[in-house]
Length: 349
View: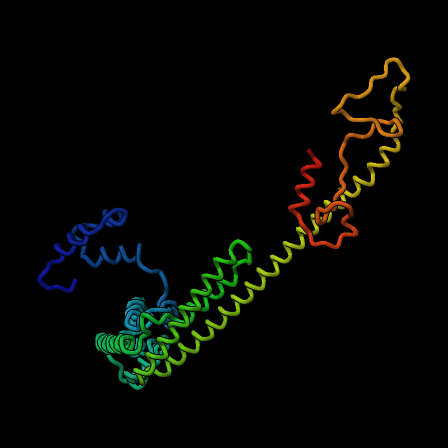
């Protein structure tokens, strides 16, 4: 629009060629002989901002730097918004630089940058936008280069992990349940971590004597590693204690179940004689009877009182140790579940 070598007709054709629907449909009724400014005004009325200059100025004064945004990017965003405000009459062109510098000092959170460039003292005689951008970008590049050199010089070594990682692993291990199946595996893992930590502590102690400039950093890392070793050792002890107590509980549960089985068997033994008493006696045939037949050899013989004995076997052993001749209630021997199981199997057969 400001190039004197281009005619108005050529500018109009450039505008029409750059438009697509629906914007192209809006300027169809405009005469081809109209000036380019008429096309631009029509497009501004349809698609331009409808905010008042005062509203744009208030929006500009409340624009602050976003989180993670560079100061140069923030300055460019202020410049775009300020240009729209000036075009809408919210502020005069002569106050552009002064207003831009004031808002930048107010909304930028990098106080070190503002102090280094002494921008607060330049509010009465502000820099232009181009000068201010160059100053800010130069200072940003200088600070970035300094931080990069500092990270290379004082950064953490690769073979020394941060103490926070050890604390994270400690919390993850303590969150696991103390299952008997995973105790051995977890203990082995913890012991391996303890050995690794002790090796790292020793290497740090040897390495700290060689570098005098990093003594404070190394001492902090050594103390953190020692604390992590102490926490892991305490967890190993706690998990061993939990595993031992769980094994004891399992033995007690097994003994309780075995005692319950013995009580049930005793009840069966107590109820068995009562059932035999209640049965009607079956007298065998008299020996004087012509139909009497004596039992053959190998079969069940008659008892002395002439009654047929009960051929079913009865438990006559201790349910605690498996020995014969006494009961579990009066047994003083050590429990022998294997022998009791054999006697029970024979009795069932």
